[in-house]
Amino acid sequence: MTRNLIMSLVAVFATTAYTAQAQVPKLNSNPGASATIFLDFDGQSVNSPYWNGGTPFYATPSGLTSTQITTAFFQVAEDFNPFNINITTDSTVYFAAPINKRQRIIVTAYSSWYGSAGGVAYVESFRWGLEIPGFVFANLLGYNEKNIGEASSHESGHTLGLYHQSLYDANCNFIYEYNPGTGSGETSWAPIMGNSYGKTLTLWHKGSSYSCNTIQDDLAILSGSANGFGYKTDSVGNTYRQATAVPMVQSAPANNQPSTPGFTVSSQINTTSDVDIFKIDVTSTSRFQITAKGSAGTTTKPNVDIRMSILDSRGNVINTYNPPTSLDVTIDSTLNMGTYYLSVSNVSNQNVSNYGMLGDYSIAGAALPSTLPVQSMKLSGRAANNKHELSWNIVADEPIESIQIETSTNGNSFAAVQKVAGNSTGFDYTPAEKKTVFYRLLVTTASQLKYYSNVVALREVNNSTKFDVVTNIINKNEIALNSKGAYNWRVLDMGGRAVANGRTTTGYNVLQTGSLNSGMYLLQIIDGGEIVTQKIVKQ
Image (cartoon, rainbow, N blue to C red; front, top):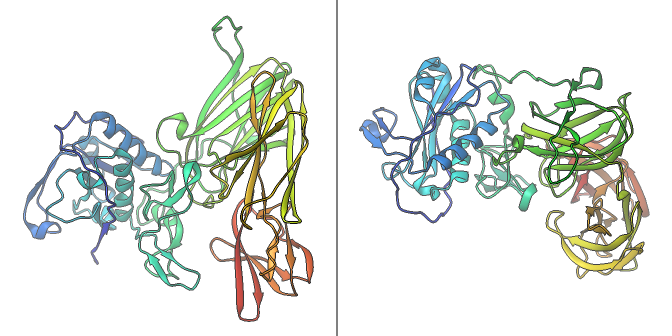
């Protein structure tokens, strides 16, 4: 049996003095599962021929508080939530598990016996039955519970058969052993088996590993027969005919306000393609405010970018909600009396596909009096004459006080550029640079309610290139671009698979992509041996 030892990245963190060990809370994520990963925070004597040259040593306690331990635990539990495996801090649960279906990860403040890695583990040791622990070095991670949680999931991944997710360029030149991911802010992403310390969405990934052409499918390996635990059973139906009914419950009156009907429900996205459908019965015309949050509303980092749709009684989609800069969804809509369905799924964003977006979420809804200040809002735009021309249509039941135009260069972080009167219907903007600019509106009503519009992306034609995409957003399965000649084109998904192709003509073109799932794609224009690539997004 080959023993593959993998040590893990440690970034530079400010460290604090070691503190006395707190009481370790006994926590279990899935107590009915036999497969077990034990996060050992309270110190452990290690006597193993596989560590420290066989010389015994004592791994000191982690130095974390009980609150920090709980946070790190729930982070790891969320990463393994889709699988039929128990994450525990209780040694008695670990010893009760089958010897070839358990793994100890020692979180310790003692690292000098090994070196400067953030952690270390043997690949596949979970299956060997040899009691070979993995290690996470809390002192080298600055006693930061988020980073310790990331490292604990990473090392656990090694023991279950995973290697590092690495980064190569378009020509297969090696860049990083630890893929650092992309983006910033709420929708930023990195693979768990890469460098995930500074990102929000840290997920299992399907990408290049120890060579450019070696594609590691994390989910397939984790859930595979070699590990022997697989996925949890999906508890919520995937079609409106299999929907889970959610009862409306009358809330208690508060702050001189009458009681209102509402509901709460929590569940999980179990697989990449999982869709959960819930049924609600509306007894009178009401203004519904519905919020969906990842990680079941806890403070644990979310693993799902949520998309939610409202369906009518026949399962037809009334509207779909997916804010591009937020992982959560908020709906504010008027519903007439009748039966409705809520569809919840994951969705790709500008930084990552939905492949690894598996985990908990929670939904809370309340039925309020039926007046809805803003009924609908649609932002449109076009690039022409070295400027971006924006126009919008707002239907509202009360006056609009102001409209703020906001821009972004990455689709995540927006900044205000101009505030216009509430009765305005358009605005022209000249960007400082000829690159893609994302736009949205912040609308404020007379009663000081605030609403964001949809996001549009515009790019001015660049005369120095063979082509220029009018907008990086794929609308209605079409890509609009200006081409200086007749070139072959193709669209690739993020796994490198061609999903559409054709040939441009000189001038304005509308490329037909066919039906595409939401997420990032690559548009390539091919002129002989020259290939020009541009990132595009299907919302």
